Image (cartoon, rainbow, N blue to C red; front, side, top):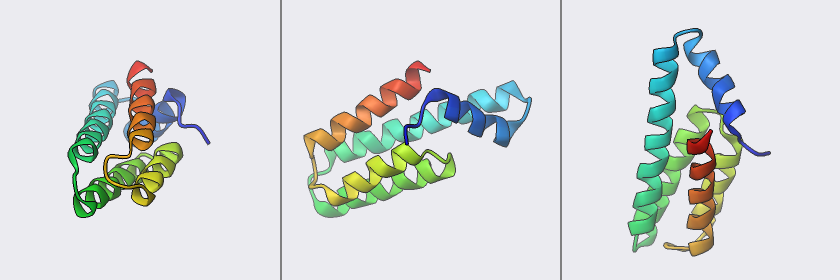
Length: 100
């Protein structure tokens, strides 16, 4: 299941209702959290750091009901630190969300 900007918008509406400022802040926090965890994954050189960043990413995804991001975080949990395919997919997901 793909997580597209419309899904994020629906989640934000459910959380913030008509408060556009709050929705904007939640969207920015979501994107910032994803960016932070992808950066930590990118810099991870050991299994422990990689696993912690992947679990945090999964937590962020679960908070926003982002099924596709949960799948990507699970893929990261199964991957070796620095896995380029995993990182590329996460960055692509982030670009799609950020563009929407």
